[in-house]
Length: 94
Image 1: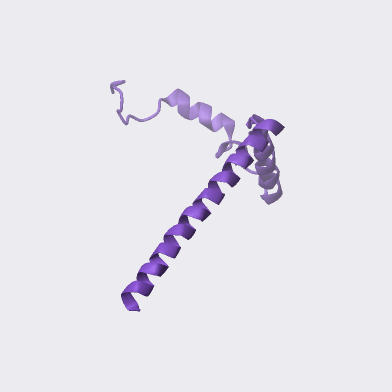
Image 2: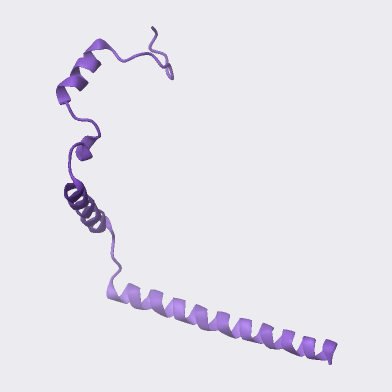
């Protein structure tokens, strides 16, 4: 067979023997019980949280202030639009 990109040829005999030597399927979760899988899950969560770039206190204060100001502005906008619709409905329906 050819080694063309995308071909679906069978694995070589060497690869088959090598996979038999490993003996396990499924990588890290091969033969672990529920507690082992739970512990692995917990370790993966901790590893991912260590990768997170946490904001500093000043950044957090700035972001929180921006969100609160935006929400207050949106509340005001929706209130004004709602009052306008209320007056329009009173005018139309008496």
